[in-house]
Amino acid sequence: MPAAFSISASDGPARLGTLRTPHGAIESPVFMPVGTLASVKGVPQHILEQLGVQILLGNTYHLYLRPGHEAIREIGGLHRFMSWDGSILTDSGGFQIFSLNELRKVSERGVDFRSHLDGSSHFFTPERSMEIQIALGADIVMAFDECTEHPAGRERARESMEMTARWARRSKQYFDEHKDEVPWAGEREGRQSLFGIVQGGMYSDLRRESAERLLELDFPGYAIGGLSVGEPRELTREIIASTLPLLPKDKPRYVMGVGYPEEIVEYAALGADMMDCVLPTRAARHGLLFTSQGRLNIKNARYARDQQPADPKCACMVCSRYTRAYLRHLFVSGEALAAVLNTIHNLAHYLDTMSSVRHAIKLGELRAKLSGTTPVSEQTS
Ligand SMILES: [Zn+2]
Image (cartoon, rainbow, N blue to C red; front, side):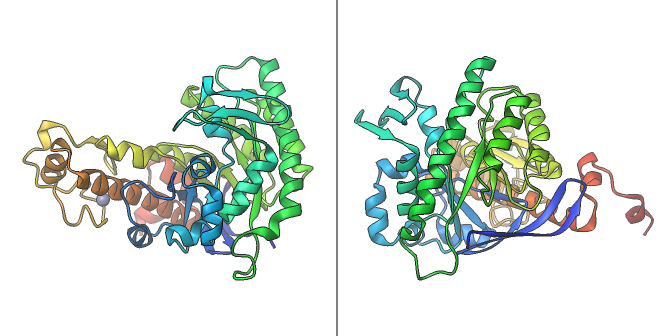
C-alpha cells in the first residue's frame, strides 16, 4: 500500500492531516528540511530528531552523482546510509537538471546533461529517474518532470506541460513495474509512493489541464512544481491559490520549493499539506535568522554586545543557550559552529511555525492567526 492520508480537522481549505509512510506517521501541514546530499548541511541527524523533523528531502540528481544510487542501494537505501529512521522524500532530479541551463539538452526521451562536478555526460529519462529513486528507497518519490523556465511564452509552457504529462505516465508505468525492488522491501510495512507534479508555467489554464491529466493517472499524492523560478511572489501565490483546489481533497498536496515563514503559513491556509525549501538552511549559512519579530542579520555590528537570544520567543536549543553577541562573533570569525547554530535555530523556527499552524487548524483559528488578531472568544475569556 502507498502512503495513506487521513484528515482529522479542517479550517477553510486548510487541513490537519496524518500521512502514514513506511517510516512513520507525519502530521501535516508539514515543513520538510532539505538534505540535498543525504545531509541537512551542518546538522546531525540526532539533532534533527530533537527538533521534531518528521520528513527530510533528498536530491536525486546530487545523490546519483555522489555517492551514486548503486552504492546507496547496496547499503540498504538512503535511510540506513544516513542513519535516519524518519520519512524521506526524493525529488525527481528534474529541477536540478533544469538549473544546469547550458549543460542540458531536453528531448522527448529524456534529458542529456553534464555533471556540474566533472563535466561527465549523463542521460536521465523518466524510467531512469524512477530506477534511481527506487534504489535510494525514499518513502515518497516524485515523477520526472520538466520544470518550465520563467519567463516562458504560452506555447513553450504548453509544450513543456504536455511533455511533463507524458513523462508522468512513463514514470508511473516504470514505478508500478519495479516498486517491489526498494532496498527495504519486506522489512517495512507498506511501499514507496509516487507523486505526480503539476506544471504549466504561470498560466492558470495550463495548470488546470496539467492537473486534469495527472488525475487520470491516479497518484496517491500531487505536487505543484515549477514555482520559485524567478517569478514575482504575488504570481507564486496566485498559481498556488488557483491550482490547489484542482487537486483531490483526500490526497496530500505538496507545494515544492517554497517559501518564507509567512508564506508557508499562507500556503497551508490555502490547503497545502507539504512544503520544502532551502531558505531556512541556506539563509542560516549566510547569517540570516528568521525570528518571531522578523528577519535578523546576525553579522550586524549592533549585535556585538547583545545579550539576548536570537529570538527571545524561541525555545530552541540555540536560543535557550547562546546570545546574539556570541552568534555574531562565530559568524564574523568564520567559525563552522556559526552555520550549525544558525541552521538549528532557523529550522526550529520553521518547524514551530508549522506546529502552530497545525494547532490553529485544530482550533479553527488559522484565519485569525493569519490576520494577526486573536478571535473575540479568546479575548473575552
Ligand atoms: Zn531559536
